[in-house]
Length: 139
Ligand code: UDP
Ligand code: MG
Image (tube, rainbow, N blue to C red; front, side, top):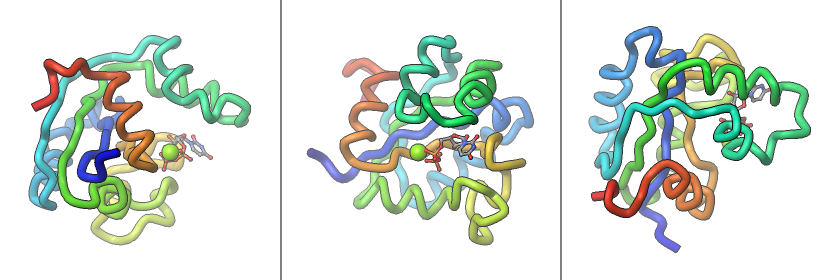
């Protein structure tokens, strides 16, 4: 299992607010190489599958609505220790708890609309990357 890749989504709020360029600049300035990237929109079935681990949670319906309401930027990022370092860069799920300088502190509006996704393990990084990209789209 490789440990140098993670998967991210710049969520619909980031695209709507025009934060894509600033967030990508922060990601690459932090040492991540973009190895796959596209603008795409998840269907309801896509979001239900992607977030299936949360399907019993009270926020699941809202999460699916939010993640499907507009396009996202999906990307695979490469760096040593990618999963952990990217979670540090994005900050806590709730922007109120996120450290200064993190992407969620800078760009997230709330615990629900929190600007970015980051994989939580090497295993999920591989699953999530393959959910969005074919082998021919990874470089
Ligand atoms: N979420 C929410 N309410 C909560 C917790 C999570 O709306 O109380 C949303 C939020 O968009 C979050 C996503 O569900 O990013 C997935 O939750 P998770 O706990 O996996 O947080 P993450 O890994 O994104 O920090
Ligand atoms: Mg998570």
